[in-house]
Length: 538
Ligand code: ADP
Picture: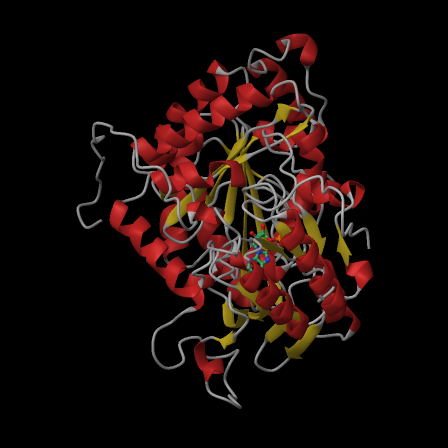
């Protein structure tokens, strides 16, 4: 441990004296062991950086507990001494902040050592995991034990984990892709160190904690996602029984304008669950960013990549202007039937679509990655996009109704803003059941383009919020701003819950724009933008 009991710390938690901080560190060390507490700048580097467009945010220390009991004891010390804690599990929340806190000086509570798979129930198809369990680890466990169960990896990484991803309401690509929906039963350490079991787990000796979500009384689990009300130390996740057959449906579309037709084509297939995977419709540049060199010579870093270049590079890689990946699952007969339905509909509604041969397509890294994602296999490709323009990325992720016109309108809002700031539009529409997540990567060069990227991100966030499209998730630099766009009653209720559960405000101050003492800034006054409505019943 590098705890200095006198002298200076590089960073102190806000409002905490050096003396109190030293005392907290001594107490933390007596709980978790000296080697699991550090204030050494060299050890704090990974906790201070992400790839987003902001300078590092330095924590004051890192503490690495190894058990729930240790988490509770650390939290009690932090509560008594008013030390802010920033929990992180597998710490791969790349481009949303990674392990960075919103404010400098937090003590990072790194839960990666708590990495036990506590239970896998083969017959009821669920697992119970600790925070440090990674997708790669769970995947290996299922394979090693020959269990016919699939997990649902997010695109980001085998090193990310189901608990951290679920509490951030992350998504994947199998029919179990809405991760929070397929989670069941949490254990949560509260800000005063008490242990809460949610749902059916509230009954001592419960036999249904991880199979019946609702329990008795209010459903509390949602409170501990996208918030800072507690530290989740166990989570039940439902696993998909391996289907006897599946068939990826991979298509390319040659025209940029095809986006409206393809999203309209997908809507009934998604709403009726004929296509139960998330269906990704990715722009060519998204795939190229992982595979091609950024053409600095053509753009100087200030102009969009020319369309001719995109077409040519896409052609070499079995890519179209838009690239559609979905999957059907079931018995061989069901899969044949569902495939026929989808392909017949595609033939009549998407004249510019080309259906790809799956085996051939899997020779391309992009398509192989997509098929893996839709069949429960963690895969790494997404990271390689970061080096395309120089290491920086921030995701912009508004949620949009599943209509073609809405997708087209989103392109019309987003593209000029990216271009105005000298960046490219690199996006995908991910069709969930009734919505599409419009996920865009703001790839930029670090640190040269940091400030420009920050302005671009802000303008995009505001442009979408002005039109009624809320991001489902944002990075730590924009949590306050995004919260400030929400209705005051919603914000006040979030604050009231914070005051009730964490009256000293020690858990992840500022996470999702929630902190004590200082409400998120009020929304800027804007003329209400007229909302487009279609279909009357929405
Ligand atoms: P992943 O590696 O799967 O992306 P992370 O460990 O990076 O997940 O967690 C993502 C975010 O979720 C963190 O930045 C943190 O804000 C929050 N978080 C992570 N673990 C916990 C936890 N155990 N309890 C509460 N919030 C958490």
